[in-house]
Length: 132
Image 1 (cartoon, one colour):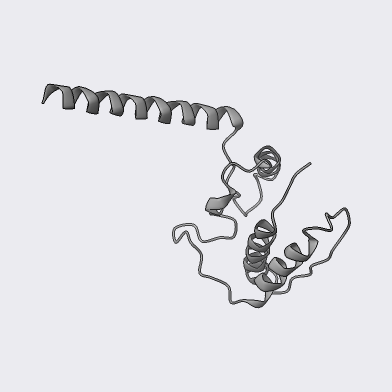
Image 2 (cartoon, one colour):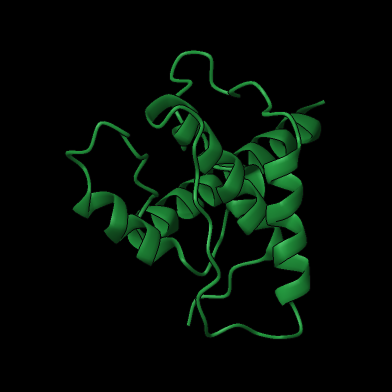
């Protein structure tokens, strides 16, 4: 299954409000469906209610300010990245221009490169200190 945090529901609601403002004159319909974890349901509802009531923040990305253009920083490493990626790929022709998250292989390559870069810089620093 996909475990979505209450914080994610609030962030999603803010982005849906941005879309509603752009595409539907600000009108937005929300509904509860089923299959909830009763332990976190109140927190999820609270996050959605707060996101509906507060003033919309300005778009983070001033170059591409459309909704969903900038994923929240806390979404990194989500267990749902595969599902999100497949959804973005399936809807690539929509005018929303959803950013496609990196695949698992791409994330592994990036982590490997970052690790190698870190090891190289540590070795260089150690060599520089030894030379002094």
